[in-house]
Amino acid sequence: MSDVFQDAVARLRNLGEEAGIRPEVVEALVQPKATLAASLPVRMDDGGTRYFPAFRCRYNDVLGPTKGGIRFHPGVSAAEVKALALWMTIKNACVDLPYGGGKGGVIVDPKKLSRMELERLSRAYMRAMADFVGPDTDIPAPDVYTNARIMGWMADEYEAIVRHKAPAVITGKPVGLGGSKGRGEATGRGAFHIVEKYADHRGLDRASTTVALQGFGNAGYHIARLMQQAGYRIVAVSDSKGGIYKKDGFDVDSLYKVKQESRVLKGVYCEGSVCELVEHDTITNAELLELDVDLLVPAALEDAITEENAGDIKAKAIVEVANGPTTLAAEGILAERDIDVLPDVLVNAGGVTVSYFEWVQNRQGYPWTLETVRARLKSQMEDAFDAVATARAEDTSTWRAAAYAVALRRIETGIEMSGTRDYFNSED
Ligand code: GLU
Image: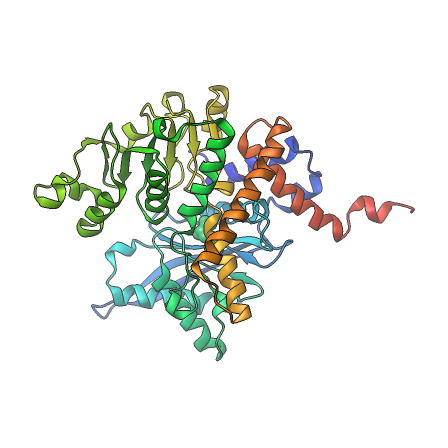
């Protein structure tokens, strides 16, 4: 299996060349600016101490302080954190935020920790990283298996260390602790705006558009809910334990209710009153990816669509709500088969966009209304789609190539403004 970071760099090189980006700009992006690796000592409830490997990568800060989430997952690795941080660099530039890219992670299965152990781990992470992050240097946020409560603990720990309030050090906090209204739904809502723009672009009729969704976490739930409200038919949903299918489409809120009560979608397989609300056939995650639907929405982890299954995908378009769900090799196969892949760096940028709004509100000391957040998110996402669609009209090889072209041109401008070989060698 190829290394996820090497894959990310190979993609950067290919798409940088395709977009005509100066080689010295691409070269500036093939390594992170700095990565901090730490071992987090955590007192467990049984009195013993365990040590969890942790990372924070500040990938590139040409366009502003680095920004990106922190992931708690057993599959985290230094390579994965670097790849995710590179994608954040592209994502923030693609949607025109004044940020570079960063990412963090801890190798841990948070579902196996008690609530108090999880709090101690979160605080230990911030203690290890306190000199590396900051409101003007690097601003973390939630990612896979981290949430608002965890961000609140981390903000509190940072403030205890620096001995003053500093809410802008981290975003995705609870609203009662300086978080932004609308941050929780932002990734799903932003992705929904991109799907709507794409549907207009392609002239899709919503009512006859079928959708399969892999991953029913925060982002997956919100995009599914909003798509269903807009008339799309959500015919399949899965989580890490398995999937369910219903030809006529699910009522997303009933599904969510069942999942909340039982913790897993598998809860719908049980017998009883709530389960009867949701009729379904069971399918595996692999089967879900190969369903004959119009839109396939991977909203879980990396490597969902690989060389092995790309030839069997029947969807007309893939909407990448997860980060990095399509491998480089798979993308080539999909492009040959004329399947559009709307890329993660555009589709899921609503989360970091509302994180940016949160940071602005914290710095202004002036909270916005939910209506303001939603309206600004919509226009930021729509403008980003238009910029990418314009680049796509220049006949880029894929939608991802168009998104990278938009992002890399912005980074290139930033680098050029600080001087290049051509500038320093010119006589005029
Ligand atoms: N973890 C999210 C992402 O991958 C959000 C990052 C942020 O809000 O800074 O985009």
